[in-house]
Image (tube, rainbow, N blue to C red):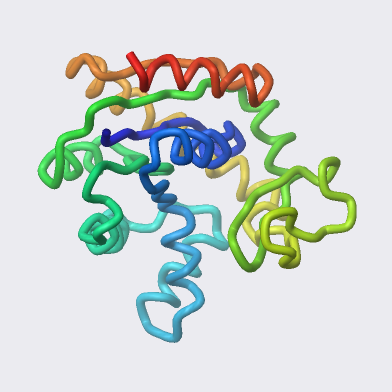
Length: 207
């Protein structure tokens, strides 16, 4: 099954994507992770990606699509995948249609106040990329691999966070309409507990 998970930063896309990935035994492809891996490379492209990320701006479509095409060619995507963080605008949705047919699109809905609070309180493992809130990990060690939990640079800047949320709001409606017209959009509430959100999504992907 080929799934897209949509939602603003802080909505739990990565958390829910990981749970569904294990349930269906298909890979979770985080566009954010692809971008962050690129920034660690010593190349002109990496420098461009890093600049956009620190500013809280979206990386240009042509760069994102190039990274995604390469990832989708991997053998572990043969039986399906879950996309987290893509598409982020209508052009990307149209380009994705050209690449491959998506089966279901899940929209996790939360308000901006909840999103801001979650983003400011989260830490990311510098080794495996696991995201946790600070109140669940007081020693700042990853519960998955033991790596060091750090704050992402773009999570430290409140203005950058608000910029990301505003960009999301400006771009999401055309994407919602696009997938509604295809009859593959399913909405769930991200304001509920992690378990309750997972139950909602599980029902959608097993129908």
